[in-house]
Image (cartoon, rainbow, N blue to C red; front, side, top):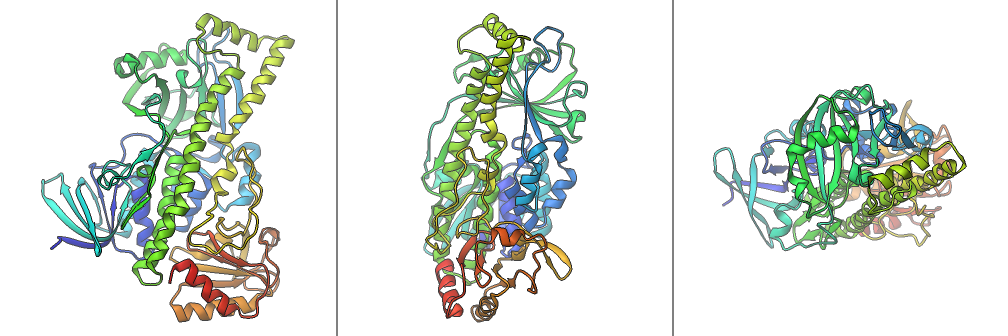
Amino acid sequence: MADLDVPVLVVGGGGCGLSASIFLSDLGVDHLVVERHSDTSHLPKAHYLNQRTMEVFRQHGVADSVYQVATPMEQFGKVRWRTSLGGHGALDARTFYEMDAFGGGALGDTYAADSPCLSSNYPQIRLEPLLRRHAEQRAPGRIRFGHELVELSQDADGMFAVVTNHDNGEELTIRADYVVGADGGKAVGSMLGVQLQGPTGLLDMVSTHLTADLSEYWDDSCLITWFVNPEGTGSWGSGAMVPMGPTWGKDSEEWVLHFTFGPEDPDRFDEDAIGPRIRELLKLPDLDLTIHRVSHWILEGVLADRYRVGRVFLAGDAAHRHPPTTGLGLNTAIQDAHNLAWKLAAVLDGRSGQALLDSYEPERQPIGMRNVDWAMFTFLNHLVIDAGMGLVPGQGPEAHAAAFQDFFAENPMGETRRARAAEVIETQRTEFQAHDLEIGFRYDAGALVPDGSEAPPRDPMGRVHHPTSRPGHRLPHAWLERDGARISTLDLTGRSARFALLAGPGGEAWTTAAEQLADTLGIALTAVRIGDGADCADPTGRWAQVRQIGDDGAVLVRPDNHVAWRSIGAAADPADILTRVFESVLGT
């Protein structure tokens, strides 16, 4: 007999596992989180939170608490390439290029039009304690750090887990209906024979978390500075630096600096040399700095061959690991948990069949693969940027210095070199302006009913987003007015496992049928007509522009704000159609 019986066991108390806990609590699902470490992350790790993640946090009442403490947009909306921060030489403290990023600068209006949320920036070392507070408030006593999974098995009726309490050495046996493996691939996947496939061991990445006063040298609107200097070996060899707060912009107290070593380089573990290397790189020989931690991680681009094994579901780094470029790791992890949570809730309370859980892998694994490929591409594209600046692999500092002198020369060829570099560096918008990649991803198969329509065009560089109500896509955002309040179309699902049916102003037959069917089937659903004289007003006309249905059509939206089904116009028997749609989506 188990010591504890819970519907869902979440293994891992990082950003993914804590987010899963928050979502499950809001959906009314009893669960337990176990995390082998005694506390949240002691490393800065990920920091960029894209618009889709902030939409998910908004849905579950977390976004405002993030925005209150995170980097203001005006202080992280730009990246730059620079030779160094200080120094007095002819090639010191020179800027190669600056680019708007993450919805800042000239990108602002476009990003704001497509989402009720701006992106944000808050390092994981600070975000995880915030998420932990939210999780513990919603599920008191159910978030247990210092508890390590040591055994996992399953049978036809459920899962059996053995967990060790590191505080007292006692073992806890747990019976669960389902397990979410959000442990970064440390235990759950390997226990079940899941394979992570793809290239690994490519480079040894070194991240140094430090405290220093750089206010004299930092651009207050810049998030990432890439260093490229004659003494280095290009963007990744010289390093990239990011402020870590808690004060933001140039007054940041803490920083993280990333650079690479070859996997066989004996100097990669010489941590005593890190401080001098940083001062030399920044050209600040007298900089007073305190190094908190030097961490190593291996560059890889791997994807789990399975996201589901019976009653176990893998999410986050347990399912996909890749370079930090484009900031896809933590964002994808949180979105994995969001996709899975409402499905577990629907199955556990009997509103859907087991088949609904079959949709998790075909929906999320292709997204994981796409993001692994994209992160690898954008990481390696920095080598293209180096070439665009005139750096040739294998050349020494003297040749690099000559290339830099030619780059900054005030003559026609210098102008040409700078123009060439600008065109090449602009290709890195795949990392810093990946608007469509972040909010335009879609599910081609899963808990949805395809309508046979063609997907909108995709920008191969990931920037231009085309809002669409096509099944499988994220519902387009538009501001509405309802009962005197301004809401987003994305708000209609709420925090619970609620569907939303959005009909045109003449779609009363759809909303009536949906409400009756929801009562009959016990489905949580909001049904509204949008337009003149309807339940919700469309004050700007934005919804009419992006809805892609007629005045008598309708769109059915899942609890995770992805479109499940749509009808362009009216139908002879809307109740019959919606019945079959719900049967298909929910697997009943």
